[in-house]
Image (cartoon, rainbow, N blue to C red; front, top):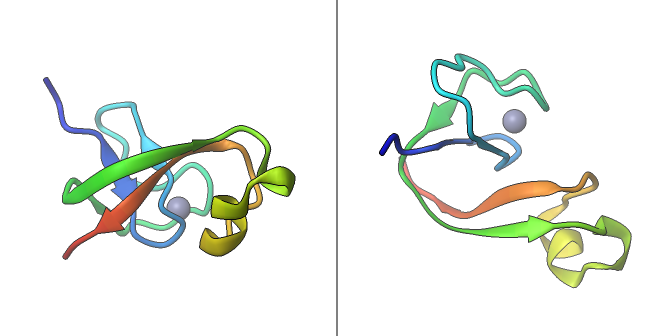
Length: 66
Ligand SMILES: [Zn+2]
C-alpha cells in the first residue's frame, strides 16, 4: 500500500501516486509524514473547516510532521 501524500501548505491529501505538486495550491512541499484526516463536505457549515482555514470540500490531514 502506497502512503498517500499530504500538502504541507493546504493539508490536502493527494491520493494519486507520482504527483509532484499539490493540485489545489500548487505547492511542491508534500509529505508522507501525516496522521489522521478529516473529510470536509460542507466547509461553510463545518467548525473544523473554519478552524483549519479550509474553504473547499476535500480530504485534509490533521497532523503534519517534517
Ligand atoms: Zn496544497
